[in-house]
Image (cartoon, rainbow, N blue to C red):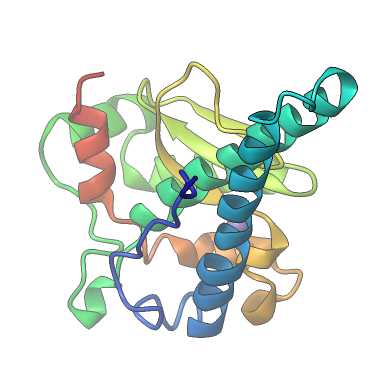
Length: 197
Ligand code: MN
């Protein structure tokens, strides 16, 4: 059987996020970490198709499938929400000044500064490896490991695993979070916000 899960493509070259996220980090994060979630999801799925895999073993592979499929969803959302910074001619960090998403940000956070502060606070508050998400209702949640917010509608996901910043920022998660706002593609986030589902 062909592998059902495939690694998603990046919408930009791996050096596009420089200087805020270095090329090597993007290459490792996408080509190795995200790829590993794809490979392990396929492995788990294949094991579960074997009728001899049952009982506790089936539970183990189900958990493996759940964790790794979560890793695929979280990472695709993360990379899709980033873009080349605006000072390099991209959309990264370009804040919207009109439209339904802008109005909602204004209503809930007073503006983009307030939203960014709240996201940073969420990311700093997540102990260990995990994620901070902005949901369609403009609330912010964090999850551990590779948990995609179940039954919720995330429109932005920020990876706070060390592998997403360690090469450039070492232990300085706050600095990574400050700088990631130069890369957030708010146009894409607004599209997800407006997309009715
Ligand atoms: Mn990651």
